[in-house]
Length: 250
Image 1 (cartoon, rainbow, N blue to C red):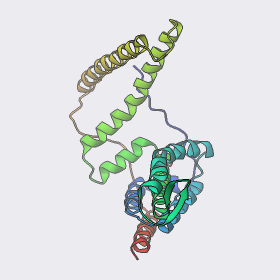
Image 2: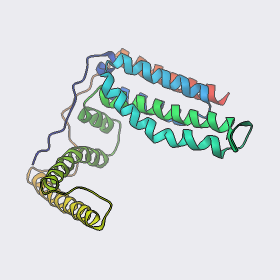
Image 3: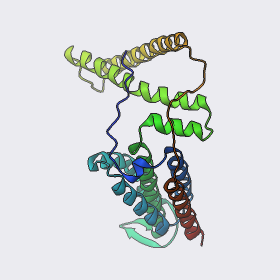
């Protein structure tokens, strides 16, 4: 069984050299502050800050665009529905009223989602996952939660590869998905096979971990070193978050 994690290369940048503990704490504070924003202008500023940091992180443009598109797709229903559901002055599209307040609120939600996505990409794109998880454990996150996150990340790729093999097997046997009873039954069998194989894999991994002395605790060999730049960067990020919230409230 292949448990290899698919890491992308980490570009050399000031954000990549930032101590993972301070970086994680700063980004969590910034994300919490962005989620608490209500108005459009602070949301625009938060997105601008996130995009500037993404440029400073030197991450591949295509990698960023694809993932930001997922965040944009998740927030798109708010941008579409809120102008038609909130009351207030606005415009009329034939006989359908469009609220200006709803449009601004929907755009603010859309931009907040993109800003949160930008900071999340900074976190996962400037350090390997195992280093970020080790930093979370150093910040007193329970070890059981770290282990669950790490195993979930590993097995997402294992199950994805298993699903790819099943799709190839169906394809060479002439199966083409259609809106009929046979297709639904076949897809149900495939889902059941995935669940059974996943359960068998989990049992095998649990036995292997116990044979290797697993005691239920998270252990890591990662070492962290703090310098003045790490502390100053974290304080600046916290000040940015506090300034956005203060601007939004006033």
